[in-house]
Image (cartoon, rainbow, N blue to C red; front, side, top):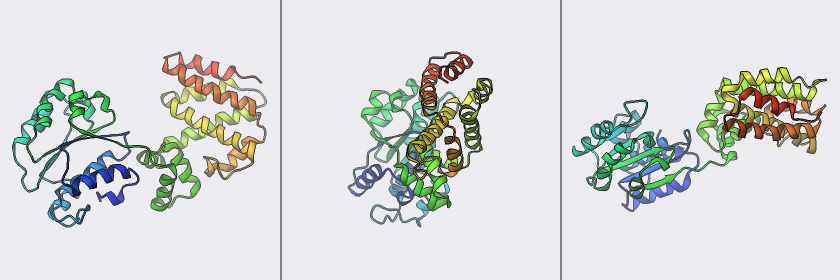
Length: 329
């Protein structure tokens, strides 16, 4: 159900929407910006539902009128979901056909005619210019939501005529609590997905069902196992492991560093309760047994260096080899 009460976090944006509705000061254009998975579209749909509700209860929709039911089913006649017709993004024709011409027709049943423009940053400069006049001088019933992951791509004239609302990361503990309450996870599992979500609930939900995340962590555990427990530093096998994860190397390094952090933390404190990978604490304890802390710290430092080198398009295999060999035995 699209409801403010069902949304985790983003209280400041919800409060802004509620106040705008209650005071009758709804803007004609909003830019809702944030990472994919942070809930931009859910917020917009919840606000749209409130705006179109026939019998609102304060700052909440009734959830029973025809308008609320239509929004839940995705079939409201006065809410248009604008999408590009080409993979490259929105052209002038997309904007003219789906918005400029369509907005001339008054709403069928509701107060507003709402246009939800998904991935709005994909509008070309020409497409933005073609919609500019409509945003500057919309009919009294026109309302636009530009959903975006990068508002820097908008023309300044678009930005100046819109209310910009930026979604911020959610507190990790709130994400963990949500995963425990809604999905019955134990604390260890919730901590892992919450930590790697970086404050993005949608990412946490993807990770919990991700087979690739599980495989990535297994690979990085194997890498650390070879590094820490091997009688000799078997660089060839570790390089081969890294070759197998080349397409997702940044995610894998992120996992590697977090595992190393847990091992070092446990080695220093003997506190197993505050590690990130609580669900595999036995592995952390095992890898700690033969740990050379200084070498592992060097591995972490070299991992960060590898990230920077890859961004400069350095040869991948060479960069990985240098990362692993530039460590004192």
